[in-house]
Every structure is written in C-alpha cells, then in structure tokens.
View 1 (cartoon, rainbow, N blue to C red):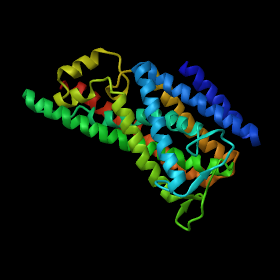
View 2: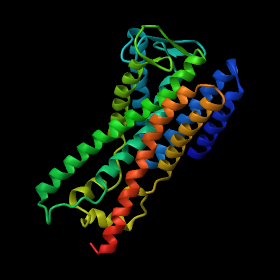
View 3: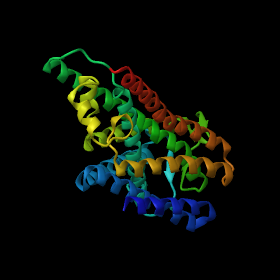
View 4: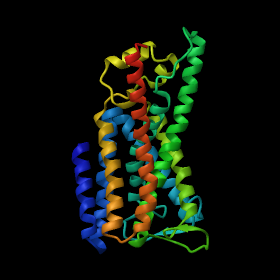
Length: 310
C-alpha cells in the first residue's frame, strides 16, 4: 500500500504542470490524498495501524485548529483566506488542508529523528562501569535532547517545504494574503515562515510522543559504545547511525526527497519562479544534506575505532 500510494503521488504530481483550472485543483486534492495515504500506511508498517491512526488524527487535528485560528484571527501565520477551489471547508479551512499537515508531518518526523540519532549515536565514550542511577540519568538526558532535536528539525523541515508550497498555492488562487506592508519572501509574508516553524515544532513533537522510537540509540548513547545495547544493535539489521532498517521509513524518505527535487525542478522549468526554487531549494536541501553528512563522519569514526581495536 505505501509504495502504491507513493507511486500514485508521484504520477499525479508529474501531471500537475500539464493541467490547469478545475482539473489542476482536482489533481492537487488527489495528490494530497495519495501522499497522505502513503505516509500513514508507511507509518503503520513501522508502528502499527492504531498508532498510525492516532498520529494522523493528532497532526490533522492540530493543523485544522491552527488553520482555523489563522483564517479568523491572522495568528500565527498572518492575514490570509482560502478560496473555493480546494473543496468543502470545515471551520473556514478546506478539509484537504489537515491531510496535508499529516502527509508532510510524518516525513518531517522521520528526518528529525534522523538528526537526533546522529547527535547521540556517534559512539561517544561513557564512564567505565556507570552506576544504575547514572545510566538512568544519562538515558533521560539523551531522551530529552533527542526529543528537542527531533521537534526542531521536523519543524524546520515543514517550514522549508512551505517555502515551495505557499507561492505555488497563491499563484493558483487556492488561498490569498492580505497586504500588510511587512517583509515578504517571494510574495509571502515572513511571519508565515515563523508561524510554520512554531506549528511544525508542535506537530512534530506530538507525532514523536505518539510514535515512540523503536531502537537502542538512547540506551547505547548512555552506556557508551561497548554497552549491551550497542552489542544488541550490532546483531540486528540496521541502517545508518544504528537506526534499524525499516521499509516504512524508506517510503517516507523517498517522498521527502521527491518533494524536494520535483519542487525545485517545477519552479525552474515549468512555473518560472527561480526565486522560489532558490529559497526552498537551499532550505530543504540543507536539511536533507546535513542529515547525511554527519552519518558519513560517524561511519568513518567507527571504522577508525574498529581498525585500532578499540
């Protein structure tokens, strides 16, 4: 199901520049539904259907709440309103919009956890034979640090995505901004990015709480590279930074990378918006790139430790 829905998402988005008017609006809605289905079903593989459904409800509920507050008060994004092209509304917000928060919130959580795993999964040495109390304290500290990094990186990922999204949707009159005279980037108020970062952190934090991580990163960081969690991790099939290989995560990463590459290409080749391609490309590209580079350094460090016999 996740791969079929991901393929449908990519196919619909490839066709998006070839459409216009009501047909383009329909493609937009169907691509959101397909993306939502891919993200939630991929999460169900990793965490089970019940947790995936709860996460989808939470992300969608938060998205609906803040969007409804936003269109009626102008906070936290700025003064904007939705048109009629995206279909029926609930509390002034098209029903498809909360699905969009969920569809990208789950990949953003995955990328945020990738950062957190690299932060504490680099084999940092620990004191010899730590006491049980010290191990428990270390685990709590690692867990709190990982939660903060996950939420911040996930919120930044959602904000970077919106640098592509908002100019595209405004150009189609799916929503519009009231001119307030404040600073803007590609025609979108800068206050919108600040609102996205704030809400993105909340959404990612809520998703992280509902979808507990299933790896030994925190335990191994507290125990050090020679601890039992590290040995247990070494026996299993793992991906980068000791994170267990997970087909659900692979789907989410493919969707995230596709969103980045297709958004840059579409703005350059089809929509004539090089400024959008530059802003979104730099922001999301930096997040994706930095999520990989620390892993390579960590792999080199672990290789050096192995060669030295430590």
